[in-house]
Image 1: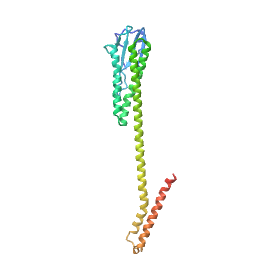
Image 2: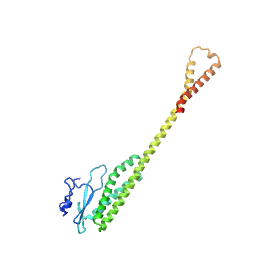
Image 3: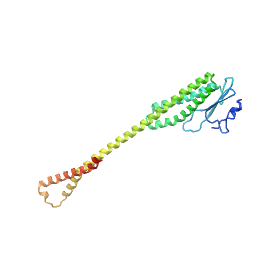
Length: 244
C-alpha cells in the first residue's frame, strides 16, 4: 500500500511523523492537538493480498474530510456500508452453497474481510476513546462492532458446514468401501465353494477311460467330493478373518 496523506491537509507534525515513506500501514487512529486521523483499509478484493488505504480526518471543529474527496462523514458511512454489502453477499452465497468447493470459496473471500473488519472496529474503538463526545463516532463504532460479530458468526457457520460436508463425504466413502469389501468376500466364498467342484468336473470330464463313466454312483461320488472340498476351502478362507 503506497498511499500518502493529501498534501493540502493541515495536520499536526506529530501525526505526519508517524507515517513512513512506503505507505499508510495498518488500520489505526491517531490523535494530536484535537486532530483525529483514521487510517482504514478499503474492502479487500477477492484473490488479492494488497490492501488499499483511505484516510478520514476530523479537525478540531468536528468537520470530517476524506482523502478521496467529498464530505468526510458520509464517505466514512459509505465505507462501512461497503463492508455490510460484502457480508450480505457472502451470507447469501453461504445459504446457496451445497458443495465443499462452494464453502472453500466463501472462506477464501471471508477470511480477509473478517480481519479487515476486526481491525476497523478496533480503530473506531480507539477513536471513540480519543473523542468521547462525538456521537457519530459512537454510532460508527457500534456499526463496526455489529459487523465484526456478524462476520465472525458467518465464518464459524461456513467452517462448520465445510467440516460437516467433508466428514459426510468421508463417511460415505467408508460405507462404499465396506460394501465393496463385503461384495468381494461373497464372491470369494462362491469361488471357494465351486472351484474344487469345477476342477473335479474338468478332470473327470476329459475323454479318458477311468471306469467311473460306467456307474452312476461315480457321478455322485465326484459331486460329493467336490462339495466337501469346497466347504473345507471356504472354512480355511474364513478362519483368518474370524481369528482377527
